[in-house]
Amino acid sequence: HILILDFGSQVTQLIARRVREAHVYCEVHPCDVSDDWLRQQAASGHLKGIILSGSHASVYEVEDRAPQAVFELGLPVLGICYGMQTMAQQLGGQVQGSAQREFGYVEVRARGHSALLRDIADFHTPEGHGMLKVWMSHGDKVTALPPGFKLMASTDSCPIAGMADEARRFYGVQFHPEVTHTVQGRALLERFVLEICAARPDWVMRDHIEEAVQRIRTQVGDEGVILGLSGGVDSSVAAALIQRAIGDQLTCVFVDHGLLRLHEGDQVMEMFADRLHLRVLRVDASELFLRELAGVSDPEQKRKIIGRLFVEVFKAEAAKLTASGASKTAAKWLAQGTIYPDVIESGGAKSKKAVSIKSHHNVGGLPEQLGLKLLEPLRDLFKDEVRELGVALGLPPAMVYRHPFPGPGLGVRILGEVRPEYADLLRRADAIFIEELRSTIEPHSGKSWYELTSQAFAVFLPVKSVGVMGDGRTYDYVVALRAVQTSDFMTADWAELPYSLLKRVSGRIINEVRGINRVTYDVSSKPPATIEWE
Ligand code: XMP
Image (cartoon, rainbow, N blue to C red; front, side, top):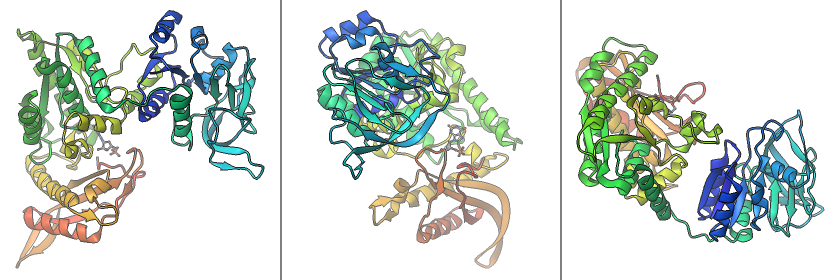
């Protein structure tokens, strides 16, 4: 396998992801592992190479150095950004601080001949030099090569942008090959891992399941685990994975807050309880939620109420389980479907020593309050990897590739006060919209409009407008349709759905949902609008 030593960069997990994409098993460990531990790893014969990550800090701000053994094992080493700088410094070169930060896209010129960059280039200069389009983010830079190293790449502002000691197979790059902005980054990392380290590309998602299962078993032993199941992708995949590991030591609690989509509660039960045979406690708390939300129209207040009630209901269920006599269900662990982007969002990725685990924003603080230990088996994975894992675990693709649905549910899609009758109208309109998106195929791609959009839903507007139906006048509510395309949900474009599709959806909603007589389409992008209306 490949060992990645983490110096606390935000993008360390991206390195791991690229290695996994090359079908090579890798492990991320903090940079301060001991020399002895490293030697043991190397002695096993399975360790094929080491990657030193970047850092958010400067070599002058922090004491972090690679364990000296890294350079004594006879294994290939690749240093990235800070990893290259510490390598240079530890092996007798020089690093200089700089007030000036270089950040963003640059073109790097390959120098000399190196096994790492051989035949890898985006284009060539008229003189025949290979050029790479790369992503840089650094202040400090290497100013003198350590003995034995040769120059491998340079830019005008960073004369030593890459260095290599071919005899010892040590390489350093100042830029970040792990980010997609570095066009040849994947080729470069594959070159290092597959050719220079000669790691075997035999790792597949099935192995990941096996490893994760073993890890969960070791962690949990024979203790009970509870998990808040929402029906969303992350908690569903976490549930399926944990069940694979510990079977009926897992109990899922599904809180139905009455703000779910049409038939969603039944579908969650059908899938997890009936088909996958998980133990799922369905808690119907819709009356409580709707009662507490009555008369409240401020969006932030609504979110707070929903969040607070969710925690209360979940805590009450968990307390029952923690107290229950049966050892299998007496919960000692709280499992969460936290994925890597959540870890970054909550700032957890910066704490490389990885002891203080941050809670997922949806149920923050819960494990402490409940006195439970936290189990987060998806913490290192990206969304698309979680989906792949879900499919490998046997979850239906239609479920795993569902659009995201916000925790507060229809509570943020009914503008202003939430009333049961509004929720009922919205659920039916939304179901028609989604059904039509799923069944309408875009001919060029052969994909449905559901697949071609990142998120789509209906929004209930509590205003009435005048219409005409048959011979009579109507005076009914309005829904807005929202469909967006985005890769990260930070920015989004409204989707250019075909008019024929919009026409069919509006016709069906107005005819089939009595109480709605007007449908509009939201043509606002994010920013300045947000995806949800509240
Ligand atoms: P906005 O409306 O901020 O939404 O553009 C971006 C993405 O986040 C989802 N969203 C939420 N998800 N709890 C969640 O779990 C929330 O309170 C929440 N608010 C927004 C939204 O559906 C979109 O995918």
